[in-house]
Image 1 (tube, each protein chain N blue to C red):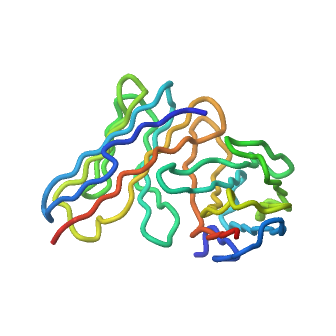
Image 2: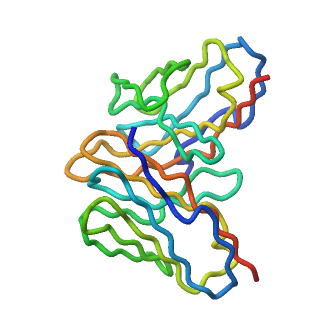
Length: 110
Length: 115
């Protein structure tokens, strides 16, 4: 299957700091998604991206669809304790399957 | 606003036992999916159903079967459970993809342990 490399694997940051994470794939994708998962729950969609170069915001979250169509980025500004969780990227090419990254675990220290 | 509902939430099985995981969605979505989530490996697709009446293998289908019972329900069956199938299983649904690949909405998962 497709390989999605997500980095960093984990982050420990102070409240108020900005966060950046990224995802790269071995092939071109037509859609990139970013999810957040909290303990004991399923992933919840944060942002969906459909076009190369697209930049989309959802509150303090901003995600970008890379120009090469092989990468995507998620930024969180002014982090707060409730941002804690695991963030997953997912990408989809021409088929029906989404492929998921291995996740970035975010810890926010008050 | 139930969204995607999975049952049971937790289950412990002995090796060789069979089990069916249930999933239902109330969003009138055409496509449904089953994933497993293991530590450090993200989500891997087991099977999916692009529309009612069709099912297709995903990345890790061995040891599983699925049934798309109707538009709302998509079940995952383990015929003879093995310890390697200990995992958290997630069901998801989405609109049938057209010009845009619609995002998936997930249930809260079934935590399955096989001894």
